[in-house]
Each structure stands twice: as structure tokens, then as C-alpha cells.
Length: 113
Image (tube, rainbow, N blue to C red; front, side):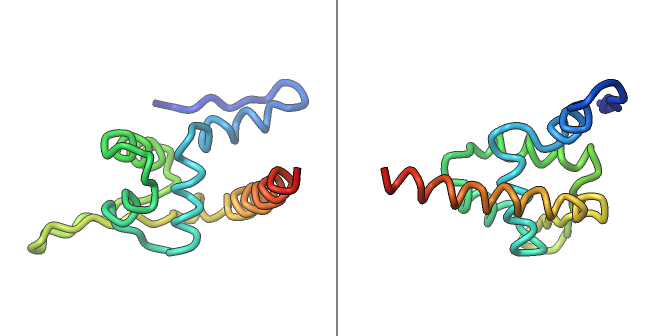
């Protein structure tokens, strides 16, 4: 699906970004790919314990369609699939890391209430 390019009013660039990283799992997947550089489907599934196998596959497919990640499949035995960020995906690093920092601060504040 071709993504819409927003060029209208203040806030539209945020909509453009959210088209790509919105959803419960995409940003988390990107965070793990930033930490690990290369992830296998199984390792992502173990890290995202509340994400079903089907949902993980869907989210990975959407990120791949948006050219944020690339999927590399090896026909070796056992069959192996790797995911890594594309150059475009790597440009999301400051966004994802800022979200991580904000989340850490938020969690600390909630614990101290």
C-alpha cells in the first residue's frame, strides 16, 4: 500500500511518521533491530511475549513494504530468516531512542507516585 505524503498544515509531518511507526508493535520491533542490528523471527517473537506470531509477521511485512526493514531468507537447513533496518529505517533511530528515553522517564514517575 502506497503511503500518503502529507503536505498541508503544522502537524502533518507527524502524521507521515505515524503512518510508518504507529501500532503497538512496530516501534518495539524497530527498537530491537536498533539494539541487535540483525534479528531472527524467533528471537523477535521471544522478545515480544504478548505479540502473536501472526501479528509479528504482519507488522514485519508492513515495515518491509514501507522499506524500513529488509528481510533476508536463507534456504539452509534449518530454514532461517533475518531482519535488519534499511538505510531509511536507520534514520528513525533518533525517533525510536527518544521514545525509549521518554518511556523510561514516564515509568520512573509512575513508580514514584
